Amino acid sequence: MAERLRNNAMYAIPDDIEQSTYRFIIVAAKRARQLQNGARPFLPTTSKKPTVTSMEEVRRGLVKYTDTVKGQPQEFAPTE
View 1: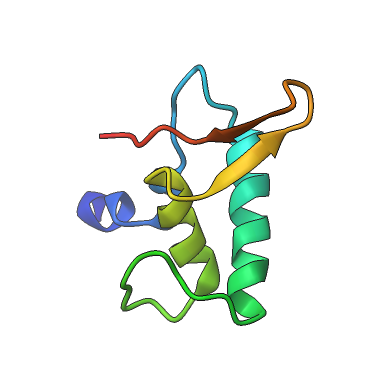
View 2: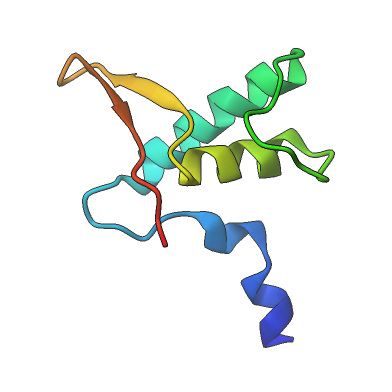
């Protein structure tokens, strides 16, 4: 049972103090919408779900976004 929980997409959310969980979710949701509208994924994937694919892309730092407060392009740092 514990092994099954570790494979859950919920554990893909970074738990880094410098990264905001809220920001991660917003960026992943926007990327999932792009995938739903026909954008090509950055990673080869076997998942048919755009939310799972987008979360993995954001977690690996492949999706760039602009922080409106800082005004500079940002990306999520890959977590090990």
